[in-house]
Amino acid sequence: MPIPVTLVMDNARYQRCALVQGAAKELGIELLFLPSYSPNLNLIERLWKFVKMEVLNSRHHQDQKFQDAIDGCLADLTTKHRQKLATLLTHNFQTWGNVSLLNA
Image 1 (cartoon, rainbow, N blue to C red):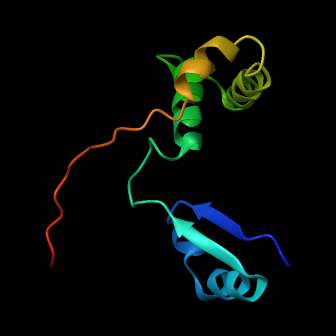
Image 2: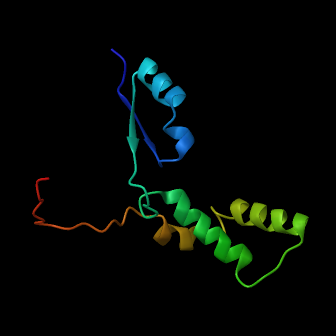
């Protein structure tokens, strides 16, 4: 018996196209789409925000230096930036308890 697979995706248009939907169905993969704007649920958004702050924060880079700065920041994620990322990339989601839902 195959292991159930759920793929969490971020609502990009190309992810909702018929080709992707059909392939997922054919392969028995469940697609779970995040809400339209959910940077707290999409960890890559938090990582990108961190990289932008580290690399671009009030600085200008020429073309190759810009790429080198991003590459350097990404290379240092598990060493130099490990402590900062430990607090940034957590599953710290805001939840609401005892919320009454309205029926449409």
